Image 1 (cartoon, rainbow, N blue to C red):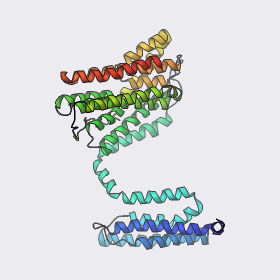
Image 2 (cartoon, one colour):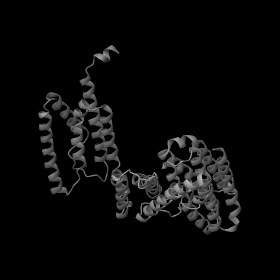
Image 3 (tube, rainbow, N blue to C red):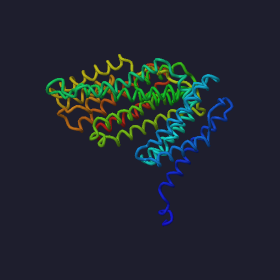
Image 4 (cartoon, helix red, strand yellow):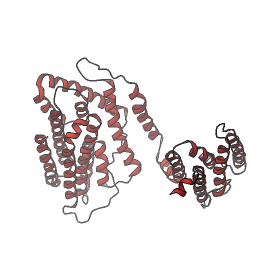
Length: 423
């Protein structure tokens, strides 16, 4: 150990610069040797290693003024510019990737000497990953169209531009309703929906029936139930899978609402999360039982429920905002004039519609009710919402599937109703 302590730190830095530069050069060598790769690049493993060592030497010779390092950078950049010019002229090769990686390699020495090691490692890993993911990026870009970039732009505007600038002052006296809270609710729900949309369209474009139910449940378990029930009516061999997928969508609803509780009210989260976990796994268990009930050979269809609808449509955001405001006033009015009893009744009624605006309003709002009342109201709204999904599932499927649907949902409803009293 004493011998290691006597080794100068600059030696370790030199070794790291050499190794990192060589690794980058080897990655360029691998690309250089690919059959379809252009063979007129300026260098690979040794060239990149020497570029990294040169940057290290020039920096340590003049660390305070960095004039030597800057001068060396100018010389290398001039050479790379000439090389790039002749590549365009002779080969019509407009690629800049190798040149940019060479300049990054030149900067590894100063980075190691002035910045934390973790940052340098992160830069090296990022360069290697982005270099090797060229084909993956090409495949992803082919799936994108102008609508996808518009959707991404909408999301960035909603979350990164509008949210920070909206005021956080109450709109009406006595009611804890601010433009910031309204828009924060829109951002959170849109984020969950957008992630589900991206997974469904780009990561699992040919999702199985089951996976479609899982991803659809992150977006809207009610809408997914209707879509899957309609598909089930058209199928003969995969009916169990569609019913199971409906149940899995309901299971994902519990996770979605639990995330909303964690974001908006951590106190209630600590109180209710065990019940949500039990409901989640119980619903998964019931769905798994349905999946394998009298269904020895599970089909492997690559079909989804067809719910690739853009979750960030402007009218969807408007509807959610309107519902949020309406439920804010309605909840405030019911609590003020009818107290806890009125809120419980309202929770059951609201469950027959979109429950997210109502629940987020409850989690955010500072109403004159206890945390227990809010928790009970949450389970009541989920109970009536599950009851509604059971009715939808029966309505859109065939009569011979009703018994399995009703028994499955009744198990979930009984557990849900027990938790109404336990929470």
